[in-house]
Image (tube, rainbow, N blue to C red; front, side, top):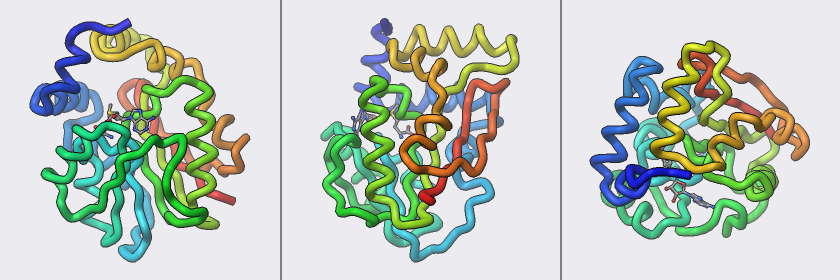
Length: 208
Ligand SMILES: C[S@@+](CC[C@H](N)C(=O)[O-])C[C@H]1O[C@@H](n2cnc3c(N)ncnc32)[C@H](O)[C@@H]1O
């Protein structure tokens, strides 16, 4: 279930960005939120980086500051069009994350920012297997997404947010053991950092 606000957030980028910025206050603001995946990340500017489900390029914008070879992938032609306008320094591919048109071992880093909560559980497993396939040996996969709050005070804000803007898949993600799914696909968990009372996770894994 979702409300009309979800449609608006996809239709109007300014609305999506405003909602995202408001939600980001819970982790110290939009700038900090967008850079969470970069924390403790050893940067090799030559590394090939993929922003999986890049949307309008919000995280791609951060990637291009540190990496020279950045690709954004999204299934939505509108998202790709916006990303190209917002972050022209990256390359873009319109495709589904569960069947990516990349050869094996072609990326050193894959990040996905607040998108995995849109996937059905089978789709999520396919995507993780695909990420494993396209990662180079030792390549890293970083997921930033919702997490079941550890602080009970955060249940109300996250429930309200999910009710207004998300669908059933986001609720499912709160019950999903993502580290276990990643491990099952051969990715080794390096760390899981929680923010906003546990309602947001930054999960780092590596192809072993
Ligand atoms: C909530 S937005 C996140 C956008 C961006 N990563 C950000 O940080 O704001 C989720 C994005 O995932 C894309 N998406 C959803 N399902 C997808 C799939 N199966 N394959 C590729 N992209 C998908 C949507 O088109 C949308 O742009």
